[in-house]
Length: 137
Image (cartoon, rainbow, N blue to C red; front, side, top):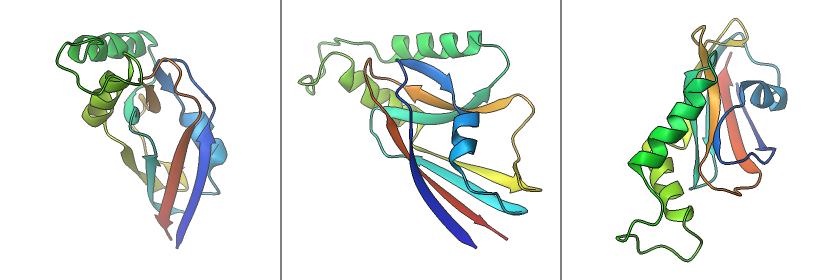
C-alpha cells in the first residue's frame, strides 16, 4: 500500500518549531507497519528530528545555525531577496528537506524524546508545503 498526501503547515516565525502534532493531523490513518517519508517543498526551510522536551533546545539550535551561517556575509552573491534568504538556503542544505520515520503498530516509531521540527530559516517564510508518502501494509 502506498498513500500520498500534500498539505501546508501554517506560517511560522523564524525559528525551530515542534510540528509533530500538526503533521499527524494531516495524515490519514497509518498502516500497522511501514514508513512515512516527509518532504518539504522549499529551499529555505527544513525538517528535522530532535528533542521535544526542553524548549531551550529549539532556541539553542537557532543560535547555532545563525552563528554557522550568518546574515550579510560579504561573500554572498545571491542577495536580491533580503539578508535572510541566502543564509536560509545554506541552513536548509545543512538540515535537509526530508525525513523517513518508521511506522510500528500504526504509530510513528520515534524515540521518547524525539519530535518533528520545522526549521523556518526565513523571517517571513509563509506556509510551507509538505508531501507525505506512506508505504506500509
